[in-house]
Image (cartoon, rainbow, N blue to C red; front, side, top):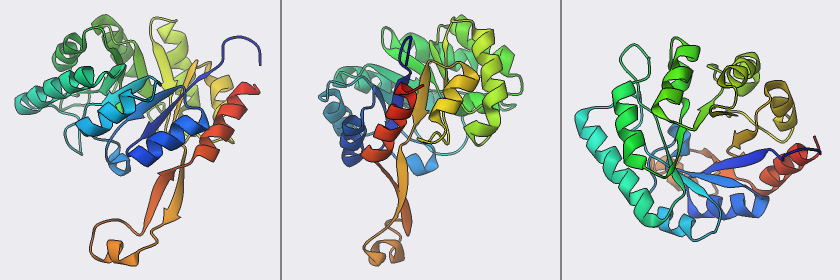
Length: 243
């Protein structure tokens, strides 16, 4: 491969997944809880453990599942969670906020961006629900957000490649457009080539069956879950390196 290598970010939601992502060669970690519902704010203990790995870590700042409209009470919680990420020694935070019509909530995003200070920031896939992606892109740039995670406003990144490529061109290096949602070892290079993206986001997950059926029977876990796979991450890294 010639030129600058594609940065590979891996999202994880537990200590085992964190170790697997690093073993597989992740360049950066997005740290979450509850990836099965898109990711929530991780515990402070997991933040501290992640900070000790030596790999840059971004903490998801999302206080609940569901939509991305942020109440005054939730804004206060998100502020404290950003402070916790800083206190834990993490590299950055990931957040989003929307208005009722799906447009970005500029005031809340500016408030959170200011709270982040010198921490790195990613705008998460609340972006994929906006009615006007180009206008939302300009809003993010004006606020000073350096990165947007997007699947191109489709559930799967492969269906959103043309839109992502358009966004990369429109951003014109003013911020990073990072494709995610359905990235695998088999399609990672295609995604990077089709979009011109310099960073790629993946869970590196494989679906496994719970070995203890009682966990599902009592409602403590689903019957089948996704687990971070060091082998899948390593294969994704290799595919990007071989471009």
